[in-house]
Length: 437
Image 1: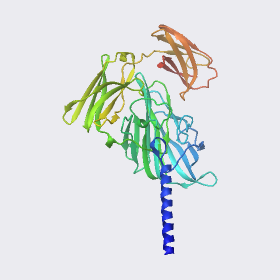
Image 2: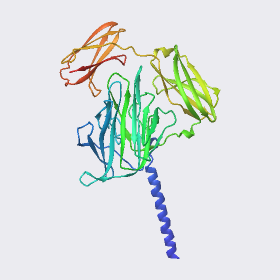
Image 3: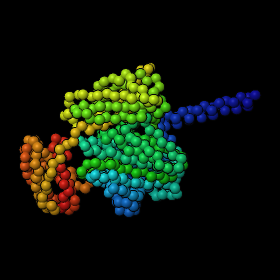
């Protein structure tokens, strides 16, 4: 009996240890913003170029110790639309454990760059052994945002391919990206054109996650649809964690459409619901930044149209005529007081007046003359921007209504190459010309 009692005691102790271990692991797999991950993959180290030309197609970089005894190789495999990599992994403004390339998107172009990320067993000499399968891998592309100014905008594009069997998850509430599956590829395209400062993983409306098992390599492609008349650098990031999102099944209303049209000096909003469960009413909200919204009205009920309901609301706010872009969203309330948000609708109210600028000499050496006809007495800024999207020379000058002539000097120290001369008035780009030194 004593031996049996000892065995029972030992077995109970073993069960207790297993439960404690399980709970500890479960706690370790939950982090900030509802994130979870079964393997802590981190690209916090400084990558080393091991083959090819830096930042060019074919360049391969090695990240050491992205997990215990695991290295990762990142190869730039292709590019479209003239897009180029200007920084393989910028940790200055993103989560340092993320992989965060900066890509330059040419003017008026849809450009992308694709990366292949491979995992290897780390050997004792800092090199790679054989290929390494990660049992469970979740990859989250986040901060898939954009920027809108007048009639121009840039909207980011992210693609993840973790191979056959990969599954996708993303926010169903107030989503600002369109996610499309093509085979094992999942592509997210920004649809709102709203910029989010920094790279905040709490902005779930502009992120998505792909998860798969036994992953030794995957493809990550990034880019944007750039509607501006100058090259635009954008930072991208993937985070090796899963996130909890609001499931579509929990939403009581399924939207078929949400549109806005400018009618004289007002905006007419229309939305159609294809499914309503315990819906009470809608609040209509407006913003001029895309982030801070204010309630402007209530829609208690719509018009029955077969299996659909149609709603309408007219925004007559007097200051609309002074704005270029306005954002709307719907706040839908259930009968029990719970609420959810629609996607954000962007309505362009008027275009920015573009200036016909002339820059000479072109090619230039030490100085430039920028000529244009102004529409009002104001202040203008002339920026000289390099091919990486960095401003290398700025000059602010008072301009008048009518003919203007601005001299930009001190350019002899600039290296030879292609630049953009850009005129900015009241924070808006109103004219751009390509120049060569």
